[in-house]
Image (tube, rainbow, N blue to C red; front, side, top):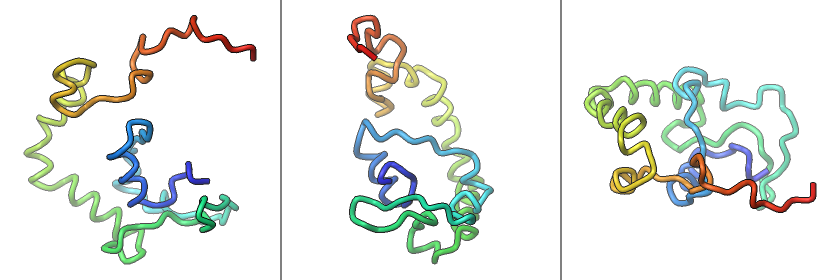
Length: 129
């Protein structure tokens, strides 16, 4: 269950410190607080430390409120600061820094080599299954 999205802080740490922990920040994070709740109480298992997986653990500033968390993310996304940085983000996602190479490395926008087309020779994989 440690692979499930269970905690904002630990997910952030993983994504910012490990090339193998890749997550997508989906649009629902900015408008759908129910995304963070296990409203149907599905049994999602336990983490390796024994804690049960249920509602997503939020940062302390959200005070346990998915609505407050989503409101804060939406406000940050719509802020003047985010608007000023939008051109850089567009360059990062769609410009030269979005492709493997020196520009991507300079922008710290690199992923595991296997995530790129041609990053692995699949014909060389010997798998009996």
